[in-house]
Amino acid sequence: MFLNLNTLTMDLSDFKNSLSQSHPPAGISIMLEALWYDGKDNWNHAHDLVNDLKGQDVAYVHAYLHRKEGDDWNASYWYRNAGKPKPSCSLEEEWENITKHFLQI
Image (cartoon, rainbow, N blue to C red; front, side, top):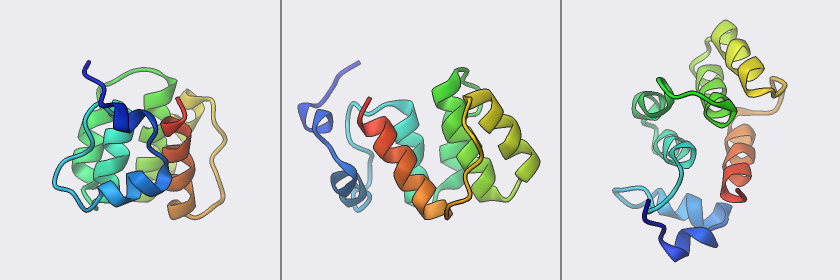
């Protein structure tokens, strides 16, 4: 995978600013790409990116997306798979927290 050195030092502000672009930053993880599309109000594409993937990291993003969709049962299932508690914060705050988490990996 090609990594753009600029993405290695990207913070939340940089990531949010990238939402004004037509494509996600080069070299970001699939989790960040899904969050990027969700940040651009393209829930369907974000969900398509993670829907068939396995692993706790992907499950974390998948859980958030189903919480945002309003599918509580499905969100709870994915939070369990991610090993994360279902948050009580706003969706915006959760998006920021998850994005910061994956920017630091």
